[in-house]
Length: 313
Image 1 (cartoon, rainbow, N blue to C red):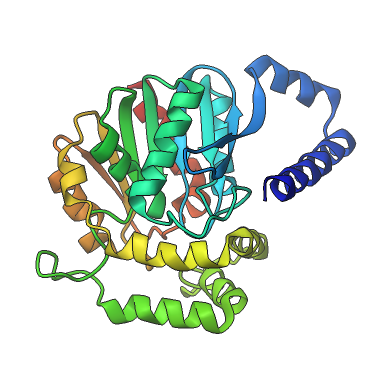
Image 2: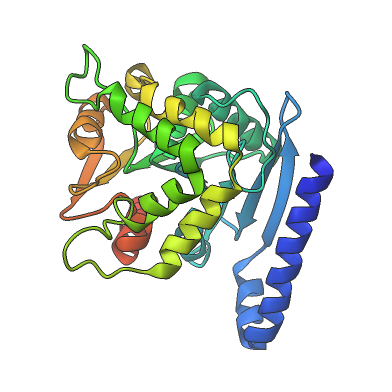
């Protein structure tokens, strides 16, 4: 598996280098050097899983956790923006996603959080801001719940799944289990078509009247999804929908920004951000009117500005 992952990384890196050599002028390459380092790498977790990560720029670290079934590529617009503004942007591919290896076991929030904690230790990250989208928001919450904030200076939850997506006695406004059973059924029947349907419709709100549809975004989302491990992405449906992060959110003791679109069709705001903002002491809540689940793409400039302002506060 490690040899296959290395081969995939080499192909991707070689292709990117070739494209850069063809399309980027020398001035752009010089500007990149002036911003600081740009690197990619892997780390091996305690159970032998290889985790791929990107590490761009210099300054206070900002660590990004991506949504399901994507990879760190989903955060590239924000990573590039912040690295260009004096921060060190780090994004990893969760186990079973993107360029990381695809273990049969460990596809749960506890292990995701522990993997991330090991990355923090490997890179010796301190005073970091954690940013999580959707499933990644759950990963951030569980990280703080299990590992505390000794290395963390702040947190951002965007379109995040906490406190819990599933309808329970404690959270009657959640989605019924049948919704997620439907996800699993569609996934197993034809995961390629299922991913295409999600990206073409509710993820970016491209199914809304008057929406400006980007085929590029649809294809990028589909490609990232198809890079995920079959069992890993299947197991992750349970992880992001049934994990209760209530106790994790109550342990937050750093400045926290919660951002959510009020037209999020994937993680409805009522049982997510509106409740999380009450559980995290002193949290700031920003609601994007008409905002989709994919604010990093559909509200990119606004999100970038809010992230930068939060980091500089």
